[in-house]
Length: 135
Image (cartoon, rainbow, N blue to C red; front, side, top):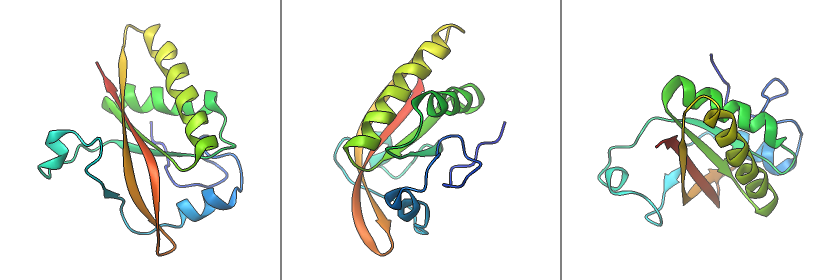
């Protein structure tokens, strides 16, 4: 199963044309991790590879949850990024829903939140980064 992580009309995670969402999708550079909330393996330069799902205010939590569950089943870890209170609210709801989806299959997940600086149109923004992985 392959999930796209860019914001386009075919991505179940992204269902709107929110300006913030479009700006986040146009970011060409990789996020720059801040030290706040970053676990020690990542601080040493060994970053885990996880599918990045970008959530906006208008993303449907059930669709995001399905994407999270699919990525967890496939690779064992997913990363969810959101900018702003509304997007973070949708992302948290999606993690809770994904946990219930996966719990039915005997899979338990944990969510490790942190801050991350992302460059969008040559402007630095602070996003919430949630690493979701099997417990």
